[in-house]
Length: 115
Image (cartoon, rainbow, N blue to C red; front, side):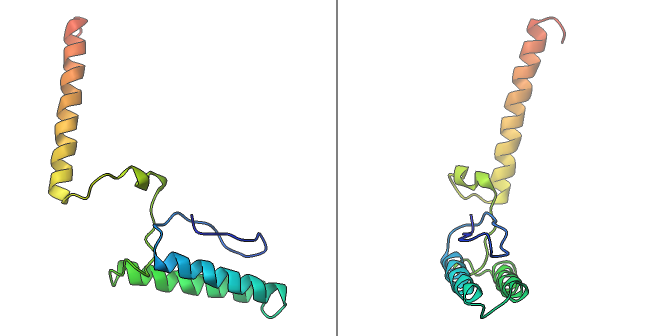
């Protein structure tokens, strides 16, 4: 999760892979929080800076392929990934698993006399 150090910051936490971009965002957030507490910046300006950071970070990841500083959004199940495979291999694996499950269902149905 992206850090949220204080509820006064207009930041919505998201899930992303930890990289240098995430670390830099944490530093930016702490800096903005300090400026906000000293009244050196207002909330709309903080929101703009946060959005500006993430827009640039997303662009770096998606358009430029920057995995070090780009925002690499990830769902909560990303921790379940054990290997990186070509798409063809993933599709083959899913098809094999589907065929195995269909075979189990067919066997269950034939055992109950419904198939």
